Amino acid sequence: MDYKIILDLIPLEVAHSTINALYRKKSLSLSTLSLDDHDFYNNQYAVLSAGQQSALCKVDLDKKEVLVINSKEIEFQGVKPRDARQVCMMEGIKNYPLFVALGGAGTGKTTLALSYAVQQKFRNDKRIVLCKPTTFVGNKSNAIAAIPGDHRDKMSGYIDSYLCAITRILGDYAEHHVAEWEQDGSLEFKPLELMRGMHFEDCVVILDEAQNTTPHELLTLLSRVADTSSLIILGDDLQIDLGIPFSQTGLGTLIHSHSFFDSDVCAGIALKAQYRGVLADFAIDVLTEIRDQNEPDDY
Image (cartoon, rainbow, N blue to C red):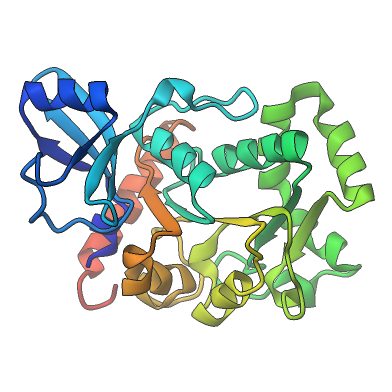
């Protein structure tokens, strides 16, 4: 199955009576919807529409039913979703041990993931582990080898995006909380190069820029996340610095696998709306055009 379909928000036309019944009952069987022969994957997100009416839903293949998602109940640490795909991401990271969010710069991946992690820290005393591959733009080098100091010093240039998002979430208290959490071990920045021998319990682990991981690196991290933890994987298939097609990266390998779209412990969504600015939107358009010109032979 194509990863673009796997992570897409599928539009489906149904009758008005179906939308009303879904909101009333909260779930409907696929056979009732006459969708039991549709090529869904497990935990896929869909929008059921009937004229001006619509319902945001999730497909549960184990129960063979569609469940409505109540976006009004979704909020992490004061952060609310800005569109239907962000609703899906926030629902998914709350309910699945592994969630994948694919999207370009400015689509909100990092902020939504961190808002959940910060909320889990405050409410359930979960540790926060933030990872990122230390690949320079253009795959010229990596920070562990090139920058002096310990691994925290080496990671400083890579964690700015995390710190900016934490500041947006916590406001004036961000610097205090980050310093306190780092000191007591509640917040850790981990390079993938140092994953060997690690074991993450009672954590929310976030991996950003996952399109720049190899399959070995990504699966090494996956194998170190305990049942008491969750893993949120973020990536942008348009900005790959490894010099290889997306399908050969760690992220591409994961979401192309049958194990991913058959599993009941993971889900994913592709974020599309960009909230950063016109130049970020323009960059996405250009990168998409380049990617589409290279398909299918190089991608």
